[in-house]
Length: 87
Image (tube, rainbow, N blue to C red; front, top):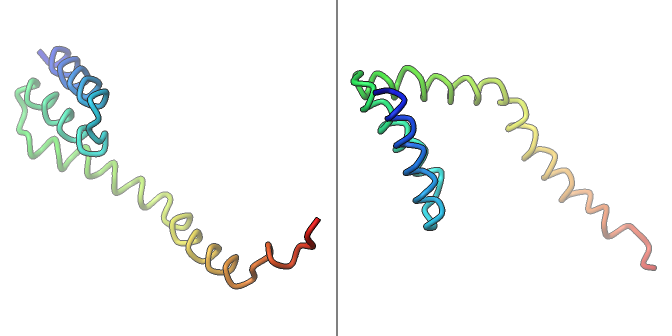
């Protein structure tokens, strides 16, 4: 039954993404469909797998997320493209 849920969620994800829906909205819905077919508590799957994985990803790449705005602001202040000679 769990494999059928995975295939149903994946099929819905592919079909609706080809019809123009945002994958960012569809992926959690497809995961809930797969969890519903597994006959497990839906909220437990949501909080114990998806949210933990998202929090781990954000914690792992937090320095990168923080460094990008700092480097962009320094590039804007320095304006290196205006100091190049025109050819």
